[in-house]
Length: 391
Image 1 (cartoon, rainbow, N blue to C red):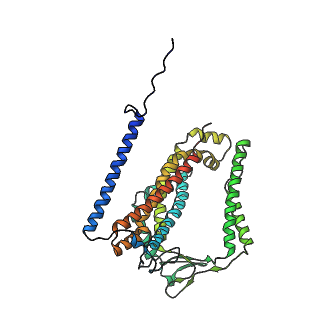
Image 2: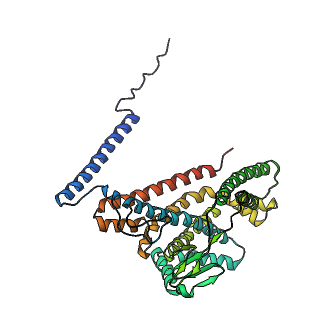
């Protein structure tokens, strides 16, 4: 007696869960698309009835205003799109440098919460409880008032060597660009690659023999030596553009404005308090037996934290750490309150001059959406690399 095979299921039948899910998704996409079309059409129609101009053609018109702080030259005769580009670079400058400072400071504070020294533990705890419970906008205003009210005028600026600190900001010497500096940058990049190869060799040897070589100072020395080698091969330029005390301001050299320093310090110090708690929670999630095993192997407290506890805590630290990076980037929009020309400030000026409110707000939303998604993608990639691999 032959057994007949069960009848094949029809993938296009309503009884198929996959088919029903596909239909529901198509219906949801159509509904969302129709809602979006209705909102856009209704907005454009209302603007047309009221005689309000719309469109992004204003981006190719002269801006007609100056920007007080920019990484590259800008004047009022240039187009609006270039003004928005200046605002974008100012926003990214705060976000990128702030994330670096926040990561280093927050990690040190989080590790300091486990110090055997009661004073260190107390100071780290006091820092976290104070700065995370004061609104970030108040902290930005506090730093801005400190730089603009407490510091002396430019004629009486505090001077340390070729560095000047006054109400006008921090002025410092900068190198006069030459070919040797490009060689130095190339040497630094080559040094980073060599340092990466060295670290892989160190960890491979550690797993094979149990002997650990330096994973920090030696890579740093490699990068510095390669950069110096490139600088030397490029002619070893040493000319500097140093600031000097002028009649009304500090002239020449490089400068960090009080607005930039207030935004950078305010956001970094505020977000570092939350990062410290993320690091502390991640370390506490690691089993205490891991620390005891590290001590039994003869590792010092520093090696235990760096080689055993933190690597295992990363799987817990990285996801909430990504949220803090996103918060710092989005909180940079508060810089408009102290006059820092970020993308929100530029959009407000353009909106007041052109009346293109929808377009200017859309540009700001696109900027923060793009930066947030890029940050999330990068951190998700790093999270996969840092995940513990099961054997």
